[in-house]
Image 1: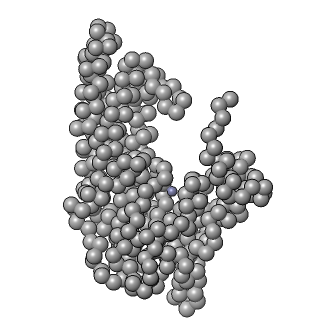
Image 2: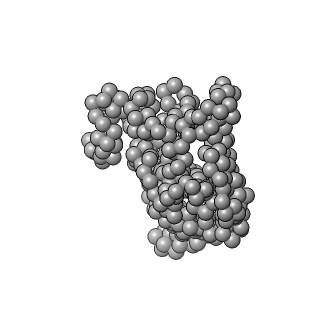
Image 3: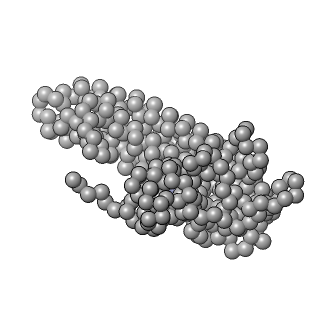
Amino acid sequence: MADQPNLAPQIEAFLRNALGVKRMEDRQIRLALTLLRQVLTQVERAIGSANVLTVNRDQIISQLIPQVAASIQQTWGVQVLEQLQTDLLPFYERQLDFARKMVELAGGDLTNAGAAAANSLQVAQTVNETIVGGKPLAQVLTQQLPVQIADRVESYLRLGLSDVGGETLRTYQDAVIRASERGVEAVIRTGVHEVGSAAQQAIYQYETDPDWGEGMLVWTAVLDSRVCPVCVALDGKEFPNTYKKVSPHYQCRCYLLPAKWRNDTITEPDGTTNPVKRPTEGDKGEGALSFKESAKEWVKANPETAKEIFGNKIGQDLADGKIGFDKALKLWQAPKRAT
Ligand SMILES: [Zn+2]
C-alpha cells in the first residue's frame, strides 16, 4: 500500500482487516490440520494393529469404520470446534470494532453503541450456527467431516485407494490424510470468514446510524481474479439488515455492507468529497473502484482477469463484448460435457 499514498483511509482499513481475517483463517487451518494429521496417524496405527489386511477383512472393516468416525469426532472435530469457539471471541470483537470504524469512516454516527457486544456464549453460538456448505459449522466439524474422513479410510482399506474429484490417490498419506486436508481447509476458511461477517452484520443491524434509512445490506464480492462468477453476479443485490449471509460456495469471501455505504461519498481530510471505494485487483494490479461502478462492468473492463475468472474462451468473449455477463455466467455454470 506504500505506493498508493492517496488510498482512502476507508480502503486502507478495509485491506488491513481483510489481512487480519486471512491470518486468523490460516492460523485456525494450521491448528486443525496439525491435529488432523496426528489423529489420522493414530488411526493408521490402529488399523495396522487390527490386522485388517489379513483375516476376516470385510467383517473387521465394517466394525472398524464407525469406531474410526467416532474417534475422529472426539479427538478432532470436537476439539477443533472448541478451539474456534475460544479463539474467535477476540476475533469477533475485532470485527465489531472494524465495522464500527467502517460506519464512522462512511460518515455515519453510531447509535445504540455496545448493542452488538460479544460474549463467549454468544460467539460460541455464532461459531456453531455459522452455515458452511449448507450446514451449521458445529455439525460439519463434529458429524459430517468425521464421517467423510472415515469413509475415506474405508475406501482406502477396501480398494487401496480413494478418489477425489477424479484423481485417484493410493497411499494412506494421500488417499486419507491429504484428501481430507483439502476439505478441512475449505471448511475452516469459510467458517472463520462467516463468523467475522456475522460480527460486522451485527453492527450494521444494531448500531448503525438511523439516518441511514431502511437498513438494507448490499452483497459485496471481493473483486480480484479469484472471485467466483456467481458472487460477481450477486454483487450489488440488496438484503434486509436482518438477513443472515449464506455463502453460495466454500471459501466465499463476500461480505455485506450497508446500502447507504455503497451510495455515499466520503469527505477526505482535505475537504474534497469522493465516492466510497472498494479495493480491487485487476489487470493493472491493485486499485480502488467506486461502488457506483458495477462489478459486472469491472470484469468486462479487465480482460486478463475475466479470463482467470471464467476461463479463457468465455472470459475473452465477455471482454470482446461478444456475450454479456449473464450469458457468460450461464456458460460458466453449464455442466461440462464428458468427452
Ligand atoms: Zn462469494
